[in-house]
Image (cartoon, rainbow, N blue to C red; front, side, top):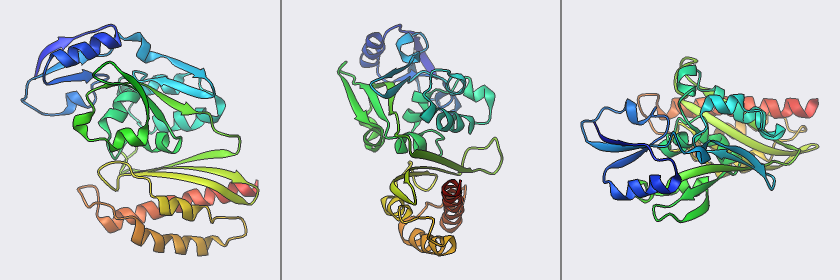
Length: 283
């Protein structure tokens, strides 16, 4: 139950209100707060009128996305640099419901820190960092991976923006998602970034959602993907991949699926990505 509702117009005012009022929550799109059933009283601090959180800019080969940009605005943005445009828009479009995309925000997706997030896996492999406003009004830049790892009680501040480095020309991004229906939340979400040289992968980053409480980055599987090459027989690669997943990926069993079933889904999606990489080499 909302006891007080505040509408600040600056970041400083929003953080001051957060410090002054106990049990207060920042309100972005509301797709998380307003879908939780609770009888607890809380104070909401709306971020809708803080214009500095709604900008898109490109500086020093980094794209800056304001935390209050909605998923639909990200899809429709004309300012996105070409190397990032397709993967960013594809990730946002994975949220099929247009009504949700109209209100759900980029920053809110990160703060929710859900394992089924459609954006966090991609942001992680893009090596995203955050402009973070501490409750003390101190501004710092920290990596998204560091923010995710922080305990919830240490996140009293506010995300001002998401910073994405512009990738090199031979870096490619792959997204795969499994859900029961097109409109359902993703049961498994995978993002992979590979830097390709003729005939080999010189770097690989991977993030998987749906197998743990939060999105994870399986380093051993990422390193294994770097062994993929046009000369390697795909059946051999896939057989070795399956064996590796049995030891390196231990999905949690929940209402969405068992450990074994989720591992098999991850295997299938990673095989599809391997097929796409090999297809790109043949072009």
